[in-house]
Length: 147
Picture (cartoon, rainbow, N blue to C red):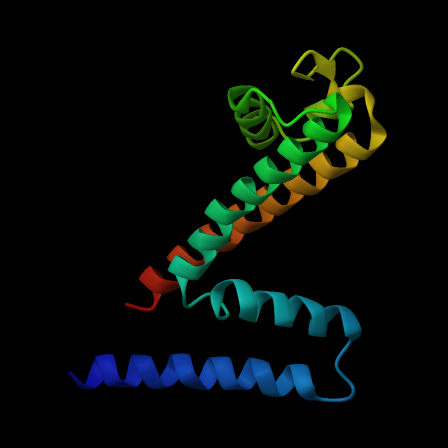
């Protein structure tokens, strides 16, 4: 019983230590930014559920963005949702593939892969999903290492 209590106290101490380090004046700006993002996404690796939520919510948000882009390009909101969904999943399973010279992605017969803005958004999508997957896996590792 005492080991569980000490483990929880160690977790609280580590989180407070990271927050304190982040608030010091001499701490590098990059470290402050990554510390804030680590706090938001996984509570410094101690909340795998929060990291998992970010991992699930990110593709949903980008699905909506792709839907709105394709609706704007086709001048209609009658968009095939399966095409948007498959494009979103393709960006997760094949990150940065949209920059390939032979890659063609169509949503409602519009080749969206030829638009630079879609390529940039797909790159951000891939980056976020990879980052949140890494944070989620690191959170799981941290939770089981400290048990």
